[in-house]
Length: 290
Ligand code: FES
Image (tube, rainbow, N blue to C red; front, side):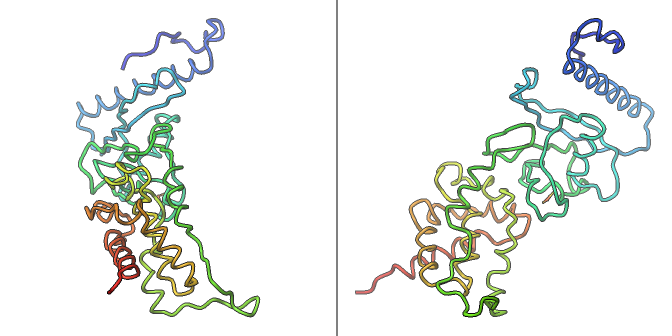
C-alpha cells in the first residue's frame, strides 16, 4: 500500500504544519506497511502462528479519502474459540482504530452486531471463525443504508417494528394494584420461541419482498406481532386490531415463503411458519359462509 504524500518524520510535523488528521493517517499507513511486512516475513519463514485473514468492508462518507467503498485486509492472530466479533475487535484495537461496527453484549442477546459474513446474515459474536472459509469477508447488512464501515441505518427497520404496536394492550387490568397478570404454561409455550427475537435485522435484510416493497412490515415485525397476538393476556379488541395491522396490504400477504428469514435467524425462530400462521388467522377471521 502506498503511503500518502506527507512528511515521514513525526518530529518535523509541527514544522511542516501537517494537520492532526494527516498525522493520524501517516501513523495508520505506517502500521499497515508494518503489518504487511510482518505477514510477508511470516509467509516466507512458515511461522507457526496461525492467523485469520479478514476482508472488511470500509466506507466513510465524511472523510474524502474513504468515500470510495473498499475492502481492507487484516491478519489477526487466531485463538481457540475466536468469533468474528473477537477478530474485528482485535483488528480495531491493534491495527486501525477507525474501524467502526456495533456490538455490546457479545453473547447473542443485544442484536447489535448483525453482519453479512461470507455471504450470509449472521451475528458476529455467535459466528466461530473455525466454521468459516478463509478469507472471512465481513460486510454490513445488505439492503440497509451504510452509515460507516459495518454500521447501517436501522431507523426504517425499527419504524416497521413500531408499526405493529409491539406492546401489551389488555382490555382490563387486574383489580389489585399489585396483582400479576398471569399466563398459563401452555400459552407461554405457544409464544416462547417468538419471544426470543433480538431485533438484529438479519431476517429483514435477507428477505426479498422487504427490498421490493418498502412498506412491507417484514418478518421481524410479524414475529413480534405473533408474540403479542397469541398472548392470552392481550385484550380481545387489541388482538383484533393487531390482526388488522398484520394483515393489511403491506402485511403478511407480502411474504413469498422463501424461508430466507428462517435460514438466517440466529435464534432459530421458525419465522416463515409463524407468518403462515398469522395468514391463517386472518383468513379464519374474515372468511364468510353463505
Ligand atoms: Fe450483542 Fe452480538 S454483541 S448480539
